[in-house]
Length: 230
Image (tube, rainbow, N blue to C red; front, side, top):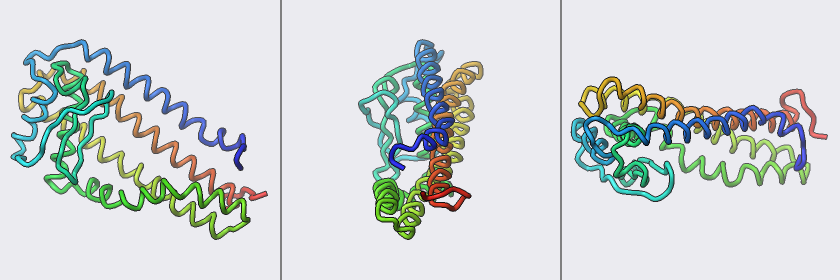
């Protein structure tokens, strides 16, 4: 199992899609990071306007280090924007910032998929840390029970990845619609925003597909999909 070429055949499509998605995201962001928005708002200002228009007053916007490390933390109600986004007036920066503000709006309005994803975080942390240990230990010890326990743990990771898809798609949809309706960007500038956000969404699709393919591989190796443990 530890050097099984079949494993790479299983997850190969997911890995190729992940590399393509990463390339597309960087390419789209780099292209539209050179296009200044007509209104000249920074990413931080655009996100703040999104929050203000939604009546959200308890979310803090702060700078964060790293490339596209932008995220919203529902526990601390903080919206972190990376260096290329926080102070930039580009279409790419505004798209990413409004997307993250979209997550804050989801949180404030009780968006069910986000609530479910947040509730899964503790279980997913356990699953991502111990599923591989349980599965490999099960094969080493020839313990079907341990293998199945590891697969069950990894299934929570797959579920998390799948639930992440509607959460991310909805945040992007909100960002594109509200950025135009609030006057953050012009209607024609929304096209560039969309290309950046669509490329970023592809990375979540790739992650979900890779997780599903990995789970199928585990099920096959456990003999649950017509495969063999030998």
